[in-house]
Length: 414
Image 1 (cartoon, rainbow, N blue to C red):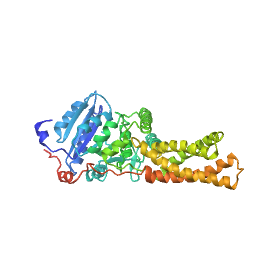
Image 2: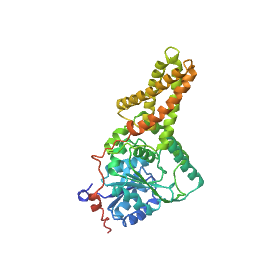
Image 3: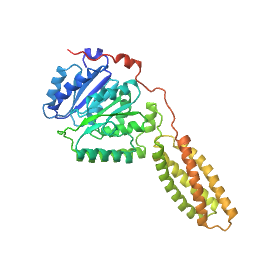
Image 4: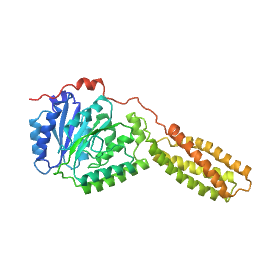
């Protein structure tokens, strides 16, 4: 960085264009983008991130940097869109970091609605969406099928709520990037999905902008290979989240976000699945224990074992809690277990009082019904007490008046 550059204030917005062998498309993209950004009320910078190009792209990029104010070049020795974005964003001093594909398939009129919510502090991440209502998309049936299928897979495996992970048109605040980028492992096309899933699991607000998008017929993306790489990425990320390898609780604390509750419908479905397995396990354990001990003791022991397993499973899968808090959650789970034990033992005592000669199967039926009631109680206790969001607001950096005061001047054009 030169002495002059060091004295200049950091731009409000930095837009990165990752390129690999794009000597033909790059001049048009830079010309259109700089012309559009000049109309916006914020200072900005365009960074061409050259990913180990083997054609004349590096020379073209340097020429463009000399020709246009506010344009610079970063050269990487290795390929990878994710790798390029990580490097540029980590070094950036801009308040809002964005990127877009060099083919400019997304209409640039979406730049303002993409960036404005981040500068105002309304949202943390913003993405262009070709699958949102209001989007106008022109592309072939093959890519349409792949895009929508990928969206379904993300929703079913990672419980993603955003609609379009792969549109090359995204932005996020720098303070968010500083926390999330070190956790993103992928350096290629899955980078976008991984970043968005981590942002969502961190309780951040993702703003989706419907875009006008026209497929580039000269696109060099290998759709099949990219899809397979994405599936491997989904498997890796799902395992990391399920096993707690990613410290999401610590990330939420660092970002100052509440641990976001999932959609009630999704939670009920997952809780029900865990509950069904727990109930089956309870029945098997009760019948086994009943062979060697009285019914009250068999019920207590079977309920204790399944309650511990139930709390652990719901903590991990239903409410997506990772990191610390195990002992507290299990202590709370045991308190709920105590209430459940009183209810189920009471039902068993009532059965024996009404029908002293009731069979073991009759006992199982009565206890199963009682357990269903206890299950509803347990879900409410988990959602409203055990795993309820705990707000952490102190220390969270937000764009404020300093950003809006500085965001009134565009780079001079010579």
